[in-house]
Amino acid sequence: NAGVTQNPKFQVLKTGQSMTLQCAQDMNHNSMYWYRQDPGMGLRLIYYSASEGTTDKGEVPNGYNVSRLNKREFSLRLESAAPSQTSVYFCASSDAQAGQGNHFGDGTRLSIL
Amino acid sequence: GDSVTQMEGPVTLSEEAFLTINCTYTATGYPSLFWYVQYPGEGLQLLLKATKADDKGSNKGFEATYRKETTSFHLEKGSVQVSDSAVYFCALSSNDYKLSFGAGTTVTVRA
Image 1 (cartoon, each protein chain N blue to C red):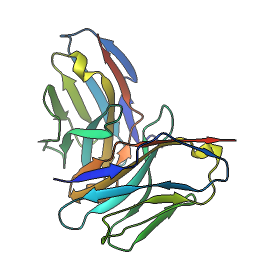
Image 2 (image 1 turned 45 degrees about the vertical axis):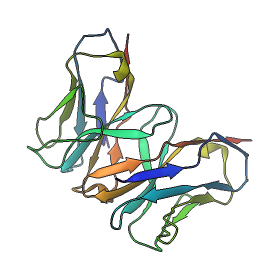
Image 3 (image 1 turned 60 degrees about the vertical axis):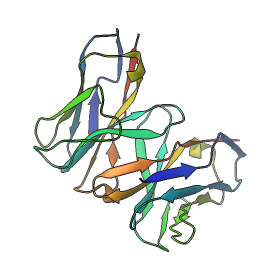
């Protein structure tokens, strides 16, 4: 029972480097999400994909792009990393609507120097 | 817009003590309410939820009641264990696809 799988689990980047965070779910969920978690701020939604082929901005989309590659996979890309993007990134999925609750991956811990 | 306010931590308790974590919200319409738990080094897990007023969500000895009149969804457990040490997040969804989270409350239970 894999659920939501994120790769990599840890990464250190230099300012200006680019990187793609990978996420895949095996629960046949329609909706997928990317959040960032920062101390004292809870989780903030970066982007989400309500269904395959659609993506929408969340609360903090600046500096990020996403791709819903297929129903299973939803990637997050940092084109030019900045120290302010140091965070823990969580991918989540849900069965159609967030009102059913999100299923989360274990996170990617990203440090930008 | 939607927002969630939960009590600040950290909270430190002894085993078998009573735990309450306060959560209040601001939202349009009739949101669904959630409590998530995050154990060290892991992602968030759904602990319990309630989808309409006066509903009580419960799981693993935790309970929370959706109080529309006070816009609250306080989490309670009557007798905590060391294994309940974690970060607890209150969240709401009033839009089909978005969750709004509180800042999280760190709970440490000592033997």
